[in-house]
Image (cartoon, rainbow, N blue to C red):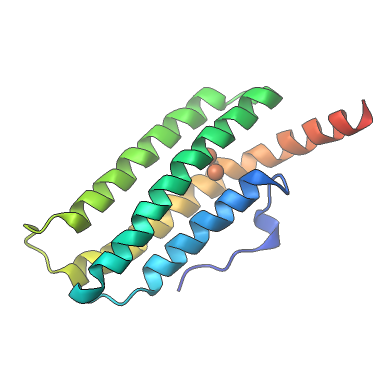
Amino acid sequence: MVMEWQESMCIDHGGLDADHRQQHELIRRFVAAPPLEEERDLALGCLHALRKVTLRHFTREEAVQRAIGYPDAREHAEQHRRLVGLLDDIIDQLERGDSPFQYGYLKGKTDEILQFWFFDHFAKADLKLRRHVERFQARSASS
Ligand SMILES: [Fe+2]
Ligand SMILES: [Fe+2]
């Protein structure tokens, strides 16, 4: 079971939140897919969709950081690059037909890794953005 999406996870009440919800939903769908060989393509479809949403999201999030003068933008962008690399490895492993592990085993491992992949960065890095976004939004509203 993937942790539910909560209102307390909102950052900008806009595009970033919409992206995060989409990422979260795709991970939820992946985890919900049965760990059966015949469902491999369905699960991989979720991962490819997640990759696409994620690339678009990272571009957007980095643009927001530039716009608001976020101080940790460089380190944050490096984390994004690493996350893309990790996701590529995850997809690659599930796509390879020559793995010595059965699909069901790999799928179970991926269920866990994928949640960590999303929530760890989200909780440790993305949530720090909120206070900067709010300050920026308040300043923009009053000028
Ligand atoms: Fe991020
Ligand atoms: Fe994010």
